[in-house]
Length: 225
Image (cartoon, rainbow, N blue to C red; front, side, top):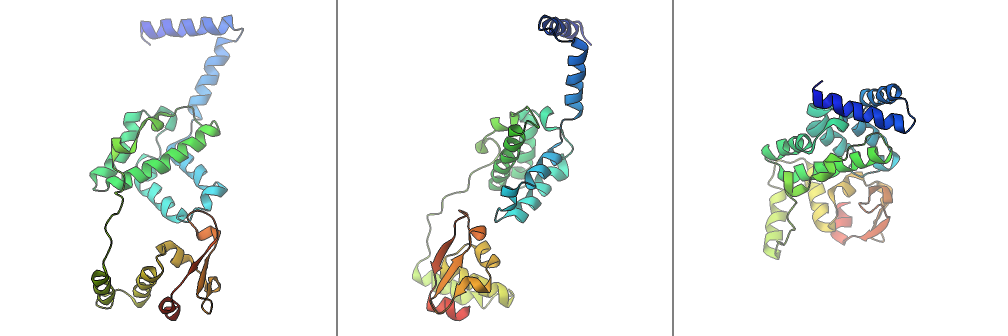
């Protein structure tokens, strides 16, 4: 311990004494807090176990992505000891790997993990919150390009020329015909479709907004189904 550190410690002890607290007990409490500070892996696992998170449509996807990009390489690090610069390295590694948009997406998810830990007083440091997407990656571009009729026809005819499985070809056709999200179709059940009324019920657990809604389907889509 340096002379400055010793002086700082002495001042800290004086402050505790003035407040009527035992310095020895306070220092032990501080050591206990440090020794019990959770790792990044622990915080991610706790967040993934919450009921609301388990209801995410892309739960399994984010479970894999957080393992791949965060906990596999940085999981043992103590969240309370992480500086903004150390957090930054996690996401810059993704960007340097050629995925700046994914880096931003992972940052957003990790902020959710840290906010949950802060609310539960599992940690005290909010250094990750100082980072913004533009610091470590990029936001997805808003699409402004739409296919014209000729391009749609070329796309449709090209599906049969690919080496994809029959199931994947059918999925692409139905996504094109209904304008649905791929995950909605993958999670759909036979009972969700009323082919006579040409309606498709999207249950709330499969909906991005977590609200049930009904999507109309064309006769061609009904024929494929």
